Length: 118
Image 1 (spheres, rainbow, N blue to C red):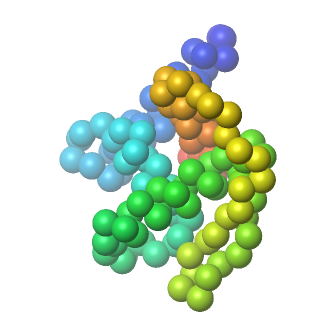
Image 2 (image 1 turned 90 degrees about the horizontal axis):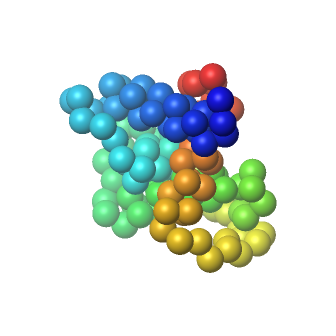
């Protein structure tokens, strides 16, 4: 199986598992999955978040997802328990399709690490 086919299969597996758990049968999109990862990384599952918090949660997720690629590094937790990251290397200029592939690959790797998928 080619790398692209394996990524596609694993991505669909992640979407299926998370959609079954968190939606009423509707497939989660990339942004929804990034948001869920942000909530996971923050660890405050029963909290209601404001719009600004939701943007920050997505930022946390993106930093965490791209940390293994060398773009971000965990820095510290603030007094409210929110993780902060510092930029290690600027992201290269990517076309929207390339960005989506990078994020899907990072998400698949995240869930492989968390042993949600194989």
